[in-house]
Length: 280
Image (cartoon, rainbow, N blue to C red; front, side):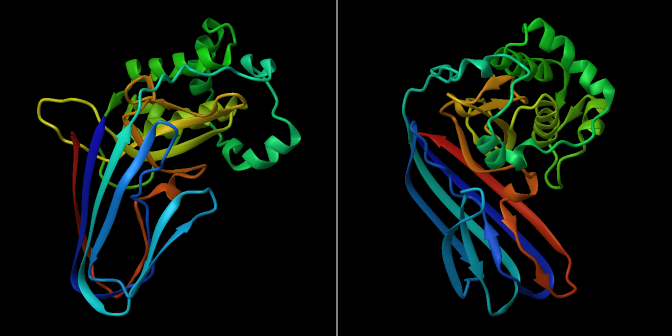
């Protein structure tokens, strides 16, 4: 299948400002089953310079810097992707010891995965929520993560929140609702509690709907030898497939924000976004 993604973000300032250098994360990642066939990014105000770089976690970033004062910034991005058939269960866990929890990464794996294993303090009530799922999964790693993803989808309401970092896992759990990034961050910290390397992913998710309203989406990836980084979407209770288009992944959610950069000036700003995904 072919998909076209058109994503426009506009910032309006109530006075002229100087834009500091900006990191822009809008470029979809290529995988074995998703090919990025076309990508364009256009900015107004026009940047003085623009380079494409790779960050610390191997995300591709459009890095722009500016010289003129402005009262607005518009980022218009268009991506075209071609997908292949994909079976998310087409893997084996190897070595076999990683099939059962608890397990231990090797010393060199732990060194590489260190950031994705860092735990936040989480409430005992949250651990007590996951423990019966672990028991019912007979301590099987993939079954546990799959069942936990499905259970979060059943027990939590998904709500839209345009901006701001994810809420703490404890807050999300106590409210039994949250945005896609809140649910993902809660699940990530639960998985790390059990010693599973987990990271935060930001991107796009296409699914058929009568009145399409698309937004940036967030989900979870875990690293298990044999599977590589395997995606789970707690907002929908599923493994990710060939209609989840990752843009950035990180151990730290803030490092996946689509726009990172500051301004010089005392102006306040208003942001508007428009996202369209078309199956062709």
